[in-house]
Amino acid sequence: MALSTGSNKIKTAIFISGTGSNLKSLIKFSKLKKSPIIVKIIISNNSEAKGLRYSKIYKIKKKVFDFKNASSIKKIINE
Image (cartoon, rainbow, N blue to C red):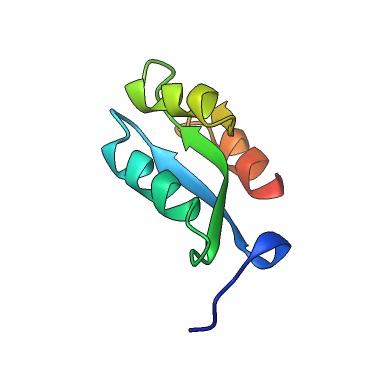
């Protein structure tokens, strides 16, 4: 795999529902120069998910949706 830098990184959305332990690891990985990704948005079905705090710490956009509602799913896809 070729190294990606700058704007060539793959824009990535991460879905969480809880503490975000995997999210934290992915964010740290995305900060490495050799990383092919950049975390652009954190999406959750739980407005109380502790992992959402990483959006503030790392200045990443966040969205909370009700996945039981079909129109919410369409909204996510459109964004």
